[in-house]
Every structure is written in structure tokens, then in C-alpha cells.
Amino acid sequence: MMRNLALAGMAAWAMAAPAAVAKPDLRTQTQMFVERVHTDINGRPRRILASASRAEPGDQLVFVVNWRNEGREPVQGIALTNPIPRGTLLTAPDPSMQVSVDGGQRWGRLEELWLPTPLGGTRRAVPADITHVRWTMPTRLSPGETARLSYRATMR
Image 1 (tube, rainbow, N blue to C red):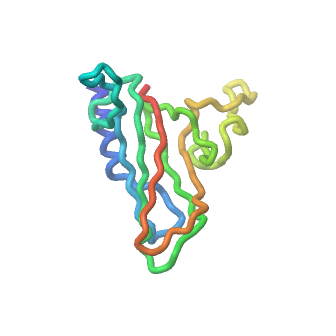
Image 2 (tube, rainbow, N blue to C red):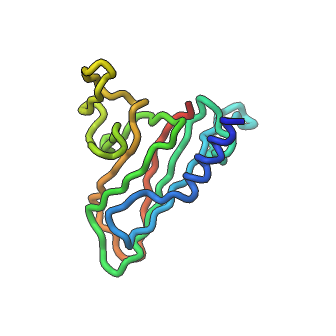
Image 3 (cartoon, rainbow, N blue to C red):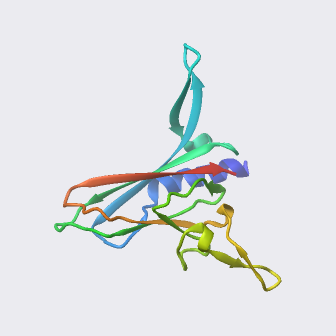
């Protein structure tokens, strides 16, 4: 029951929560899917994206972030930020992606980030610590133009 409530919350988050952006005239939408592997009639594996409403622990999730420049001016160098939903583990961070392990206070590559330990020391951050992901888009987005990116996570 609790897992179903968490899944429903994650699905609602993925459909409704826009990524945080630096420009107010940029509209974003995040979608979440489960990657399923089925065997076709010839016995070959086929990967499909299905609704994430029935995700189970161990399932591979695919997040797709779509954005559109709804302003009158081109935008460039914008930063798109997405929180990682609770109950998911980011898999294979993209080299162009920055991550945060402290709710978006500090950013960097995972191997550069450290966290305090309960006994006053520090430890290297691990993928389970990631709370947010961010991309800085180098390409120019003209008025009315759209773009997308995706990343993967695993359901815990």
C-alpha cells in the first residue's frame, strides 16, 4: 500500500512538476516511464517504455525532460534542475550533468562531492546520495523552439 502511494506520488510529480529553470519564459515538462523488456514473436528482446504507475523495486525508470522557449527572445546557457524523486537511484550520471547531494546547495560531478558523517568526519558521496540533477544547456533555443533530454534511474 505504501509503495503504491509512493508510486502514485512519483507519477503525479513526473507529470506535473516542472524542472526549475533560470528563465521564466521557458516551459518544462518532466515525464517518467518504466523500461520493460519483452520477447517478440521471434524470440528477440524488445525494449518498450510503459507507464510508471506500476513501477516495482529494481525497475529501470526513464525520465524525459521537455522544454520550450515561449518567450520572444532566444535563450542560451540556461540551467535546468530536476529533483530526484524519493525511492529512486540515479544510474550512470551523464558527464554533462551536474549533481547535488545536499538539496541543490552545492553542485559538481559525483566524485567531487563529499558529505559529513555522524561522527564529524566526511565521506565521498555515492549515487544513493544524489538529490538533484542539473544541466547547463550550451545550445541556443529560439522562440517557439523545443528540445528534450533524458536520464535514467532505478526504482529502489
